[in-house]
Length: 275
Ligand code: HPA
Image (cartoon, rainbow, N blue to C red; front, side, top):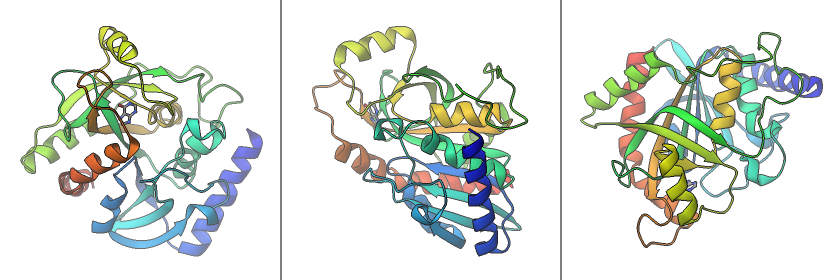
């Protein structure tokens, strides 16, 4: 992990050198279909993931692989356009690297977005769900190994990962945009296969509202680093067995792109209220 810390320092150094000014207080990690929210913000600078030490190329459709430094009034924020997933087979380091890099660059709050399958019957396709809490059903835990940062406890408390103040702000932002957000528990699996109907039926009994293949490792790491975390899922499909449709990643990306105008205006309003 010492090596990882060194690479994070190299990446931060390169960005600061190339971008000259760089003092973001917020970072947004874009999940499937969310990447184009970057189009409407004032982009001061960007760099492709392949040019940033420690950030390998994204391999999944809908994950462009660019890091933007954006300006909002007198503040700056980062947009990671695309993420790495555990199922890509490179371990936890590339999955959690953006969070470590954001921390190194001074980010205090992080918005994690994703596309998710709706389990609860209060969720419909294209709903946006504020993550209230999560269940980690991924194989293992990204915090195993040496402590990621000098400020991280060995045994991080996880009783309040998702920050209540940030949740209030996003709810207000959505209200201002005429949208009611849903709320729920997000359950993460490694993927890459979608779930079976029997698994979804079991997860429903456990109390999961939505299911996906991301977000939880980043949330765990950000929480362990003392960052404020907000999670937002776009319900891109109903989970396996809830209706008779078969599932495909193309449908997931298409459905979340349909919700894009709504996502953009809510995030824009969120920035107004946040900064
Ligand atoms: N299952 C898992 N991950 C997902 C889904 C799903 O139904 N939809 C979008 N990501």
